[in-house]
Image: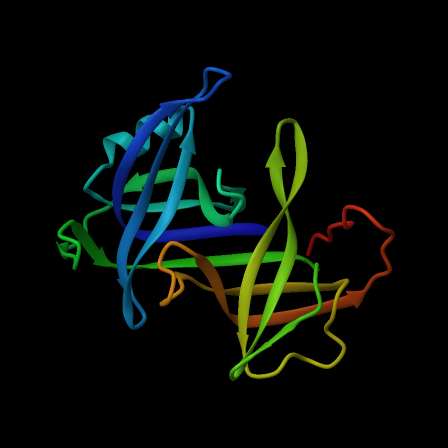
Length: 203
């Protein structure tokens, strides 16, 4: 499972064509959710590029999946790959950066295998989870960084199958970096893996 639903104002950053001739659009869903304003990065390919371009500056509800991409600098960042975009009627306001935004949210659900040992944080635990993403005619592997408040259930470690759901928000100290703040965590059985790509579990 790898699913995202977001509600807010779509802001088009740019439209391009890939080396293979596929059009795509890059932008953000801007909203005020929980305790702060956020802009969640979004990409749409093919006909979704047209729909995103037409939605520039307007409130939308958007669904898709999470994918980690690598920048030219070598840094990795999460983005939402749009699969559906629908216009909605929603009151908007002027965001701190001067563009329109709306009261909304970005919620994510992911299932996969814990790829690294959990990282202790102040009052929380950080997880890096390997998840499935559509790739060509099959499936590929991507990663999602998540923060789980409090302590993890007993036995959660590298190779544990987990399901997480919660808010998808940029970090306060790095607004261009997305993190899944999990409010729900379910644990599957621990699996043994050989070196190489993890075997991904489906809930």
